[in-house]
Image 1 (cartoon, rainbow, N blue to C red):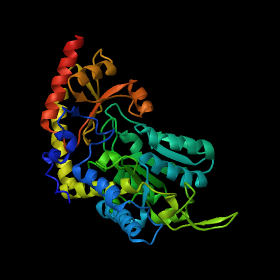
Image 2 (cartoon, rainbow, N blue to C red):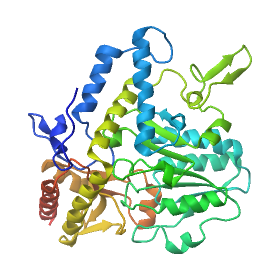
Image 3 (cartoon, helix red, strand yellow):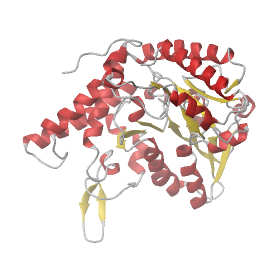
Image 4 (cartoon, rainbow, N blue to C red):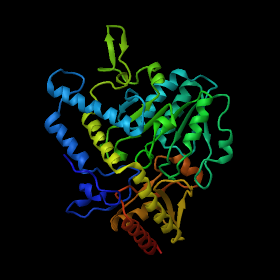
Length: 407
């Protein structure tokens, strides 16, 4: 049994990556994926060593134990996010698959020509391209909430965001480029009053913020395990139960059926009709360990600690006039995209890498947003609960050396 995690700021000791004998980089690519705590790695190993069996398929003891471990995670996720019914928790391969599930199983079967899908200009491709395809297939129109130069949703557009044709709102909770935390609670409630279905991309918010589904009341909410210290290859879609029950399956095969004939089939109950085939059992169980880890820390504590890091990083950029921080939202998470004057992001990343600092470059799966803001590529430093003020200092020193190198 792994020990309880240390408090935020000290929990670095719970991550073997940072205790390795070989030098590791100052890891600032947490918006892409996070390192894994010992409790997650141990839980994965325990499953494969002692519990490995398929789930829902056998009555023998080993299979029963695997099934119990797998299903226990469904309840853990529901408890953690305050989901009223654990059967509304569906396991997927990640946020991308979760959103595509809704786009295929709900949107493509219900949208009609003239209907409107409303997204924003700051969406990750995973919460934009599925709706482009749904609009093309159904004749619906894709509309976009504009983003200001400060990286926030345009307040004038938020006064009346919906039209009489809006059927679906798909919005990120926290931007993976700008760090902006959007006012989703207000928008969800306004959408509900008009009968508009809401889809929330919570991939960047669930690892950093307290999220309560029972208070937000989205119709769908999606996130990924690997961005919240869990394994890759597992994600979650939380759906409104009454909507899920009306939707057809996304994938077909074993487990998602109730009865099969040679020419027809009927579907299993929710959530199983959306979990076709052998699931990623070990990854789901590892996700459960990640939930335990975050629950023991407390999401309020995580948020408070990361706000301290955020303030320090903002001070860093204020001290470097050659660095342009893209996005200055007042309500934000620890994600910082930036440009260095007259230095291509890939060139800057080369120097930072030599200094042992891992940041990301590119369009960050948000090409339309970067184009609107006048960029084709940006550097991005994203922090998490195991980062420290020493990492902020290292980033500042690395940027200073980069500027000096190219001066």
